Length: 365
Ligand SMILES: Cc1ncc(COP(=O)(O)O)c(C=O)c1O
Image (cartoon, rainbow, N blue to C red; front, side, top):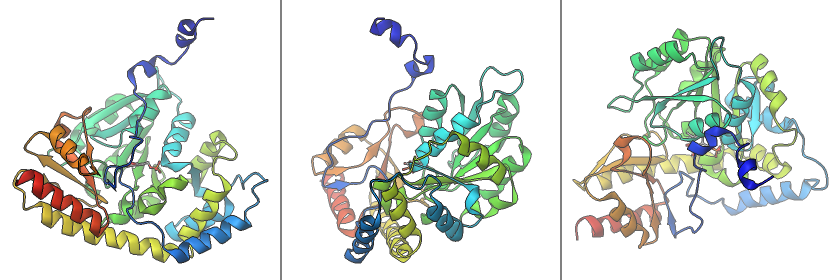
């Protein structure tokens, strides 16, 4: 068989999808990936190293991640068996796409619905699993356009709907009343509230979800300081969690990640809370400083990053920053409204100072 005939066996949808690429060379100030800017203090490292030393590396990890599930349930509510864990919430999105993929009667394939712009992996992962992706534009304030969403629910009957709140890349939370209207109006869809950035928000919608079995909450440790260990989860109705568990690889969470994540949710929780609070303080300071530039318009943010509209050449601005060792994010594809926008992750006070100085030099030479 030739490569050509083997390629013909790949899913046709892959022809339309690009792999998610991340730049490999990291500049000195990395403000492009919504990570936490804080490395861990010495005492936290000591606890982690002791946990690593206790780990039996010659054995498979606990396939149920029992202690981690218990820690999650204690910290975030619910029962341990309402959680399905993954290697980052990226994997959890793929688990839902595998498990909930039965087309509705009369439909060729299952559909997933999300507002746009939003986190790109809802679309990429679902399409790679043979789903139809339905994207409904957010309104002018980056909030849910409830009527357009309701119309899409009726016509497309999605199996799953995703709402990142706070949303990436717009930074805002969706209004709870609009979310609730959709969740109550369309109870035959699984409504997944993605709280990847929930820790940085003033209010968390997820607290209201427990009342509705059609509602699930997606979470991750990536944004609060542990992106490297790849731990994410979804909390959903126990009977649904039981089904999703059937498609999870038995040892998808390695033993070291389980140990570190459990510590992060227990003994080390105060350290992570302090880091999150420091990011929120820095976010507000950064908003104030960037407001001095009339060519930048900063959208309100409840996350660990800011979305800004720039009245100028975005490509040139990003290049000028990169030449000063500062990486930020721009959007060359997707929603046209983002073409003149940049996304800046909140850094440490020193990183933010470098960013502000660089912008002063570039924008007011
Ligand atoms: C809204 C949102 N959800 C989920 C993720 C993925 O997180 P994880 O690192 O847990 O896979 C991201 C990452 O950027 C995100 O922005």
